[in-house]
Image (cartoon, rainbow, N blue to C red):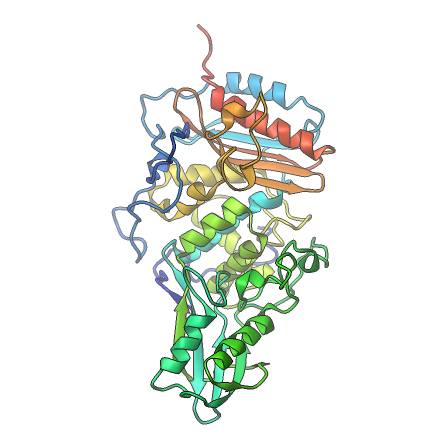
Amino acid sequence: MTFLVAMNPSRPGAGGSGTGKNRGRGRLMWAGALSSALVAFALVAPAGPARTDVAPQGPAGPVLPAASTTDPTGTSPEPAVVAQLLDAMFADGSVSNSLGASVFDPATGNVLYERDSLTPRTPASVVKILTAVSVLDALGPLARITTNVHYDPASMTLTLVGAGDPTLATTQGEGSSLAALADGVLAASNGPGANAAVQLRYDASLFGGPVIAEGWSPVYPATGVVAPPSALSVDGSRAPDGVTFVADPALTAAAAFAEQLQQRGLQVDAPQQGVAAGAAVVASTSSVPLATMTQRMLTDSDNTMAEVLGHLAGATRSGVGSFATSAQAVDAALSDLDISASDVTLYDASGLSTVNSVPARTFTQVLSSMVRNPAMWWAWPIPSGLPVAGVTGTLANRFFTADTVAGAGVVRAKTGTLTGVSSLVGTVVDRDGRLLVFAFIADGAGDIDQSRSVLDQAATVLAQCGCRVSS
């Protein structure tokens, strides 16, 4: 079925698929407004068109400003100095026995610091960085997800076909909505016409498999942690209370669509599962660009959006989205970047699973690749979507203590928190204007608040660091 526009069939590895459960898998100058160009990451379009879409002239929303990432005259920090500073921070008992850490200078490719960086650890929500890479690699940042309604005049049947759009709204939205679909049905010359009596079917078969991942609690949907991943959902799968999630997102979306049709005069029976079976498309609605979704997913750490985007990446590569194919899509994306996935094991796309494991170095390799590989320009929504310390998203309420405030507005990083797990992965520009990437994962943290404070302090140390050997 057709479910996307602006897809890129020439993307390397578009037909690839993984195996198993993914086991073989600037300083920011805050001066009232953030720059609108991601030159800090030197993400430019390749000379030869590797994709069918085009490089953006400037992403929307706050992004990193210019920084010295590839200037050979810049000063790279001395690993010995970085190690001295970070070792002192990581001696804290809340992280000392369970920490994987990695710091890279992307301009040179130099490893500035490593501490058990190759040991796979439970990463929590920083997994969303890998999910963003997988879906952007599969589809490109300009892709829009198109939800269609098909109509069979012989049986007077409308079929709402889910395409994996996590942003589909009921009536109001900047992109796709059920209201727009209902208007389209009534306006279509080949549609049922006003006041017709129709049957309504819905098709969410683009995604399959279990809706609770290994390593999840089965009560997550009912407690508002994450919705069951579905190719058809509306309003983020939220229940009427605005807190919990519905048990059957596809049926809920179909029922909401039925209400929209009824408000326009159609007589509609109770929605049932079904397939379009070759019926013509009579209405369509398209989402915001994938870039916007991935930015929001990272900034707000949206678990439901992460799972849907992960399933979508899996469906693009294998035909059906599932937890397994989502993990395989990460494996394929890392392979496209020549990054080893042999020690990466994923069971979900949000990082909620307690049995995920990823080495810290994998994250710094991915972020460094965004700087060093011009062909990876399509990844620009990732650094621009990372929360800004003390300003946006999951870092809005952090970096306000005396020993971390210097990192506010300077550090950009994805956070991760589970019981016993605290992680921080992102970018920082040091005192000399050198862009650095880092990954800190503590998966045996006894005191989450203290471990989080230690990781924030470590990132702040990098922000303040000149890190050169004294003469």
